[in-house]
Length: 273
Image (tube, rainbow, N blue to C red):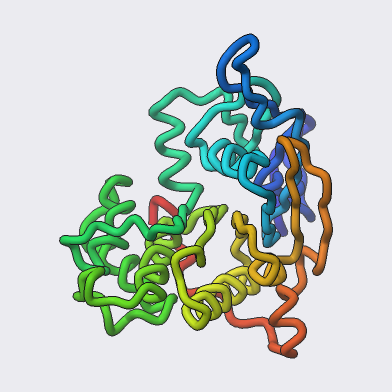
């Protein structure tokens, strides 16, 4: 039996619903003042439950990068409310924000952002170093993350010894190693060829099918077609929010292929593990 504490005392038999991975209300972001003010976001409402797979789309200047930066706790809104896994981000100080970024969000960037002079293993291990995870645990979790993305045989390779697709898979392993509640990917296939893009998106599909919540920015329709849901921004407003597959279902490409649900990744390690 599950037990939780209510206002009237302990209750058994069921658990309260988990907060959304991302919950945003009336979010606005303004850069500058007066006539020079730029309204990047103009009142965005967005609810992303755990297990969802969302593509955020829009032309340059639409506000998608600003939205991603706020969701990733890299920027703060001018007004509105943002809750990450139930946490009111506006209530956190800089130290707490740093902890949230390290433990609850995994980042994947278009340019990979790998350290050139360190191995794949050392790149993946880095968030755990910042998180003060002990050495043996760091090694176990970094190796598990690299095996998860199919690079268990490349742990000692430096970025310049890896293809673009392999470098992006190292970046994905680094994003997953802290077992975050949310993976944010900013144009993750922007620097990849067609074959590598397909491999990376197939990995995202399998990760989501195993329960990972993924939000990615893209301007490519074929990349967005991998997601369960597409949100389109124009001039700082959401103008379209279309669902292609249920939150608890398979991503569209896996469902179309008739694939079964894969086993959950062997990386179910919390920050304190």
